[in-house]
Image (cartoon, rainbow over all chains, first blue to last red; front, side, top):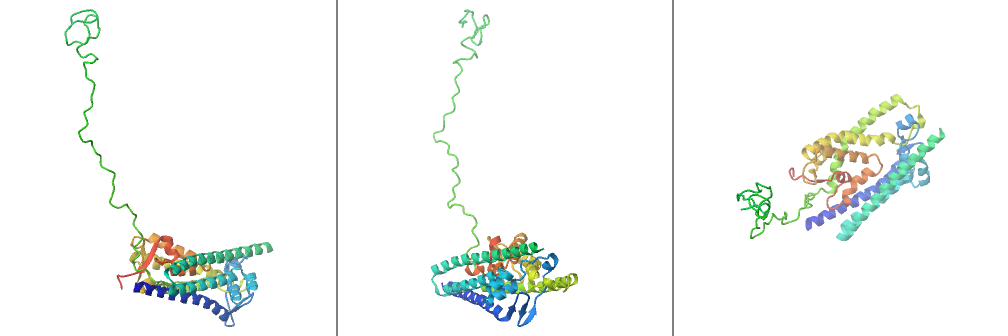
Length: 154
Length: 222
């Protein structure tokens, strides 16, 4: 009994820590990086590399603009970020949602009763599957729209 | 005896009249002289064939590995994963240098319009490719041979299937491919890694669930 409750508390601590770290990582992205439509900067210095896919085929790869878009989204510039790559804001929002959900799960695992923990775990699966599906759909959908736009401009 | 048709005197054993050919009442001629076949009487106690097999308890398929086993905690699994990821990171850096040099040699910096903000498509392919390259040894060969990768060995963990056996190389390969495929989509590798946090009691990742395997503490080395 003691071992199992001790394990539950440890698991709750892990979830609480991970959830907080996920939220803090978005804050770190906002603090350490800056971006505009052309360039990403880390602590004020330009970083980044050329996209082989875009150079070779003339259309962006699925990840083109995701860094800039995610950084702008972490700074609250959602519309500007969406224009660069719709997947960036979706990724940041889902990241924050999952972080909050995991931290809540950890708190329930530490403080809640067994039935509450089971309900929270079931809810967690729904939240995570929903976030993953939304982020993946927006990411790939945004890329396809961008490819179509580039092909029309040719 | 005499023939009933022509009255000719006949031997008692003949079946037909030797004068007119009519059948006689005696001999081997068909008729009531031959008693009908009577099947043997059943024994006093009727034969009881073997009853259908009825074991004392109904058959149940082999259960998943006993839930009482020490399934690895998320923290220990994550630490093992981080150690394994260091090797993946090394190969990623190597590939990035090689592919980056190749890219610069073939495209060059003149195509300024192709510049993006980050790792871009290299990031898209480097993680899955590096995971596969390192994983073929670390997570297929080692896991199928001794039950744990380098990182899992450090954390005293072991990968087993639903029957408590080590994974076959094919199963370990499928597990690796599923794990690498998650790397192609943003956010999925994170969700895969976090899944054991809310997966009681087995604490499986999604790539564990794909092949129905479990990660437990390795009592042999504890």
